[in-house]
Length: 292
Image 1 (cartoon, helix red, strand yellow):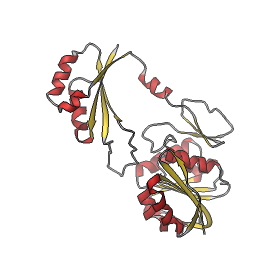
Image 2 (cartoon, one colour):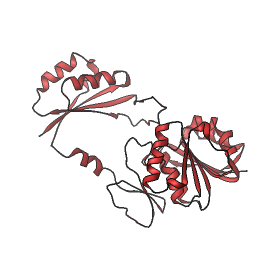
Image 3 (tube, helix red, strand yellow):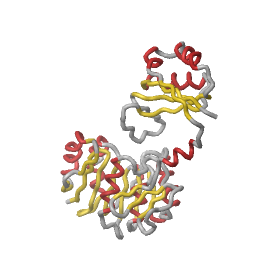
Image 4 (cartoon, one colour):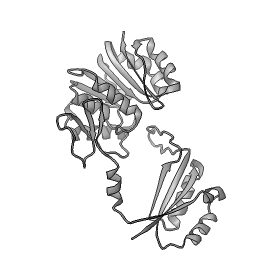
C-alpha cells in the first residue's frame, strides 16, 4: 500500500497538540525529529525532553482526502504550523528494515568497533562492542561518546580499576572492560541507565567485570582511571569528588563539554590534575589529564 507523509513544523509548546491532531485525523504513525540540529542530553528520571523546534510527521494512507485533512487540521492548529506543511508520497517498504540499514559498524581509533546486532563484526579480532541504536543513552554516534572511545583506544587499561561516572548505556564501561580493565565501577543517576548497562554488559560477556551503582553508593577507592561523559555543569560541580576518587597518577577523561564551556571545566579540575590540550570534534570538547 502506498502512503502519504505529512510534515508540520512546530515548537515544544505546540508539539503534543500537533501530534494529537494528526492521530485524530487517522495518522498510522506520528514521529518527531529535531528541526535544527539541537543536542538533547540524557534526561533526569521522569523527564521527556523535546527539541525547541521540531518537525512532526504523520503517515497516512495515500487515498486520504488531503484538502479535507488540511482543513480539519487548520481548525485545530495555528496558521503558522499549517503553512509549514509538506506532503510527500511514499512507496510501501519494510520500514523497520530501512531503519536498520541506516546503522552500520563504527570504528573508533584503531581497535574499537560498535557493532549492531544484525551486522557481522568487520574485524573479529578487534574490540567489538555489541550495541544497538535506540533509546540506549549513547551508542557512539554522538561526538561526546566518540571522543571518549578514541581516547580509550589509546590507553593501557590492563589490570586497571576504572570509574565510569554517567555510564548511560555502559558503552564506555564495556569498552574499558574489553580493553583489559580489572574492574569497572559504573555510576548513573538514572536506574534505567544502570539496567541498560547491566543488560549490555551481559550481552558483551563482561558482567563479572562491571558493577553498577547510584551516585550516593559510589564505592570509595583509588581508581586508576576516571571516565565522565556527562554535562559541563555537573562536571565542574563534581570536580573535587571525582578527583578524590582517583589515585595520584590516575588518568581522567571528561566529555559532554561544548567549546565555550571548556575553560570553566578545565579550571575546576586544574586544582587537582594536570590537564592536557583539549581535543575537539565539531562543537564538542574532550579534556583529559593526570592527577597530581
